[in-house]
Amino acid sequence: MLLRGDGPAPARRIAVGVLLAAFGLTAAAGCSVEKTSDAEKPSGPAAAPSGPARGVTDTTVKLGVAATDPAQLKAFGVPSEGPASKDLYAAWVAAQNKRGGVQGRTIELAFRPFLPTGPAEAQAACVELSEDKKVFLAIGILTGDTPLCFTETHGTPYLGQWGQSAERDRRSKAPFVALEMADDRQRAAAVQALLDQKLLQGKKVALYWEAQDAAVTKNTVKPLLDAAGVDVVVQTPLDDYGKDQAAGDQALDTLVQKMRSAGADTILNTSNFSNLMIALQRANWLPEQVYATSAQALSPAVVKTTGIKPATMQRVTVAAPYIPTKAELLADPGLTACVEEYNAGGTGDRFDAAAASREALSAVANSCAAFRLFVQASDAAGRDLTAASWQRGAESLTKLTLPGMPLASLGAGKHSAGDAVGVFRWDAAQSQMLPAGPPISAVK
Picture 1 (spheres, rainbow, N blue to C red):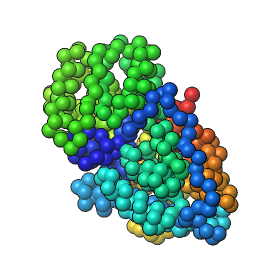
Picture 2: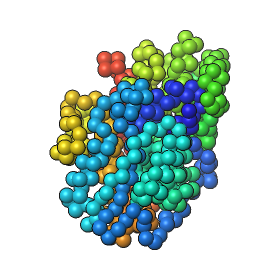
Picture 3: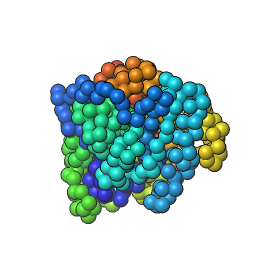
Picture 4: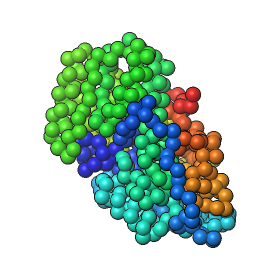
């Protein structure tokens, strides 16, 4: 099963991590394919198509949403909670239409239930929304290169929870905008945060990555480590073994032994979180510290479901896109407005934010942030709403105020909104990773 970033085996562990991340925490940093070197990175996407826009009339604009619901996750064997995605978007669309829609146009919702279980499901969702429903723009949680079905193949603007990169920007014929910061910016900001806090100073570091993250590790992470004088005693890349879980596990076991033999006292992992942690448990060996750049580690459900022990997590520090605490989310006026609109809409069961988990609150915040960004960019586009004008509108927003996102911005050539990373450590009392400090700006 090829999922978020189409990473290597073990596929089941990646599947669980992706599905949990898809509904809960904004997900695993370090899982998308980035093929261009720093010198080759383009400044922005191909020009957005002009002319009459599909899904737009004088009085309406059709918004597509491909999103996962709790019931679907439970059917897949993944625990979840919170309102159904369709009910959330239906309530927010109704509330926005009462405010006048966007530029006087009523928003029409075309919802497509979606699980990020591989390219075939993503292709089906893309074709249904683009060709059958004829939406103007799609909001989604598609993984890896699969959103390019919208932006490259069908010329449909796409607003994702994640997945933006320079390569995908270049290939897209329609706008590709994401909430989570682009892959190269994630790694650079996360590693720089570790360096700024001198957490790698004086350590013997084993650098680990998986096949899909080779370019960003070599072109972004390794130069940062070299410039800071970090002692990388061994580099341990994992090849892509596809669906052959046994071969992937065997290769990982060999890499862990290589780390140990090299005298590494620290591991820096720039890829998927759970694979390596399970391999370390199999080897009954842990270095002094494991630093991870994957936000999978921030989900208690991912940790529990994949079988990572609390004692193992005590050795882990995560530097990844910032995810607010429950207290921060409850104090966020933007999220409060999102919850109030949903509860007032009567589209689903009432959501008690105070009783909800951080993951459920994050899920609502992420979905609402995507919808709010669609509205803001559409309003900024003006009355002549096309893919090109929507892109210009999004770029003109500059600094953003979105629920669940302490720092965010868009601009010319910057099409991923997130601007905050955090350093997180394990809290044994709460059995989860919590921020060790305030959000750190990734904007220099």
